[in-house]
Length: 260
Ligand SMILES: Nc1ncnc2c1ncn2[C@@H]1O[C@H](COP(=O)(O)OP(=O)(O)O)[C@@H](O)[C@H]1O
Ligand SMILES: [Mg+2]
Image (cartoon, rainbow, N blue to C red; front, side, top):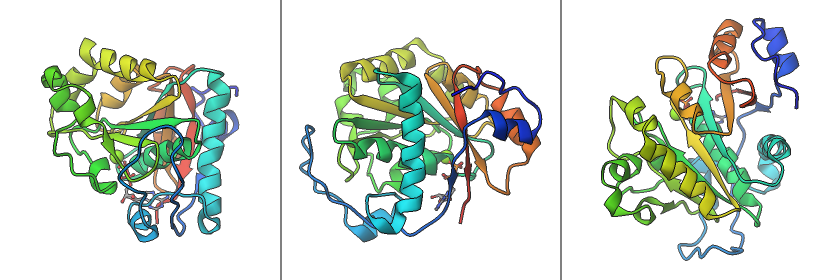
């Protein structure tokens, strides 16, 4: 995919140059497929539970939406070739759907029985994924680990009820999150999580570009960046501005998301 002209200033140029996928709200139900290699003793979620979590699945009723996420998955895999990678997902402005896209894209990778995916909630000020996924972060999360590495990474890797999808919740909420993300320790964590299993794909759910430098700081840790624009919410100028924060080589595309 050609993305090197993405500093274009008009919205027309953005849609010309960047890949996009319209993700529409739809009904959601469930799946309960068996597990390939990871042990998943907790059992898969029931249809109504996935519905509450606003998650895609393999059934016909949500085909349009799950196809959109599979399409993004295919593009990322096409960019990366053989290797697993780290994808940062950020929205242009709060509530445009960045976390929704990060969660469902991670699920789309986990649908493939030859892959596992790990979603890391990097919105330290307003952590959200554990609530959306119904995970009780009893052992703490990313921040707790960064502050006390001796707790080990295993306790903060939570099952989600979706086979092969794990969550690292943010942990205690923090104001000065940029300092954590630019730390050597954070880089080491991300690198070692990626390197440990060749079939593990990492998704960083970052805060929106508007109002925080974290999205840009986090992009240093990622191989690819996906910017989520709220359809009818974020203006072309705001989208251009958001996109300009990232290295052109890392920008995998803009997803136009229509919130319900
Ligand atoms: N396409 C969509 N379909 C259904 N619900 C959505 C969609 N996009 C966003 N939402 C919901 O809208 C709310 C805001 O989205 P969220 O992903 O938290 O935004 P952000 O992370 O950009 O602040 C959440 O409750 C989310 O589940
Ligand atoms: Mg979010």
